[in-house]
Length: 170
Image 1 (cartoon, helix red, strand yellow):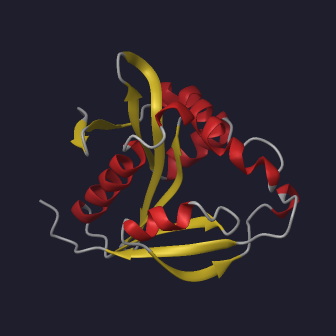
Image 2 (image 1 turned 120 degrees about the vertical axis):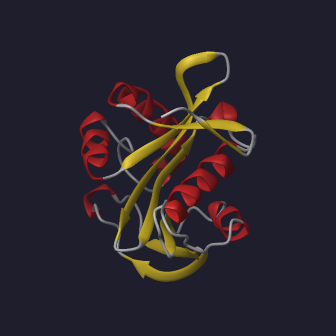
């Protein structure tokens, strides 16, 4: 699939050959969570497992093919999309890459008939909630963190949901 433009950035489906870059950009982006979670955010086995059950969308670094500026995981089940591990390389944060990736996920979900798009956010990442709220998400549930052995201080996940206007798939 050729890249599509989303908010000025070419977004494409990741290939298995992108796995190492997805790991790199995700771990760089999630390094800010080291105050509350132990270890790296992801590894190649996790990315491969996620690719088997969904897909990643990626934005390459302008002028550096094969190097990623951002990545996001997307899975769809029972009319709901799930957006996970939205990651933007720190050097590209604040430039619209995250917004482009979220909008690309939304577009794919609508095309595939989803009624809703869900995300989960660590409650201690207070800086993320205004971004997701501006993108149309609202808090809908509180969930336990799925890997409690990694927790360095009390935390939980906040599920946020955005209703989508689904269309018929062509």
